[in-house]
Image (tube, rainbow, N blue to C red; front, side):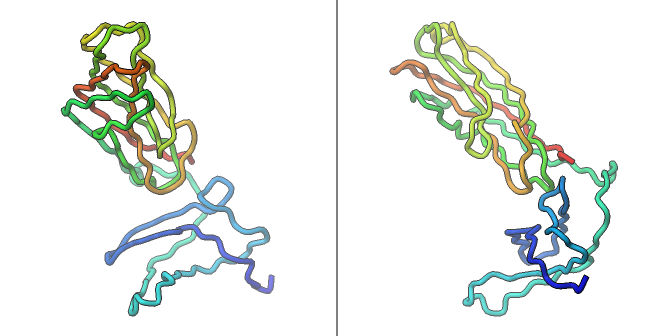
Length: 206
């Protein structure tokens, strides 16, 4: 009760607003981005600049800071954060490990923790008839999510596939990237992806 400092809670770290006003909000609590330190009774807002002493004259200004009890939002405060790719380039894959489709990455900024929803559709073909030929998998931030395997693929036969999924878990606030990766099961095979379209968006977790 004597207002002694308990330490710091970094709710926006790192944060690079640039030279224009940027609105940011963060949730502090058990279901938020960060949690209060134990025994917290009061809070003081601190804006800390970078440690680079060569950036003389740098400054930061915070305005209209508000604290309020956490509550569910309502429709006027909800806005769509989404992304889309449409790639008509013919891409070939020959490796027996997952390889990124160069036209597939979609990056979305999460204003709050949430789930990433995504959908991809593509047409592919294999150079040789195989009982088990190709595999595709979505990756989020470099980690594989789910695997889609195509079996019984006829040589040079055009086959269209769709995958629609949600991230396995809740993702933290910040940028997140989803992409599609492909590989062949058999050495010497060539998988060609002729057309890939994808969309992604996020929904808040709390």
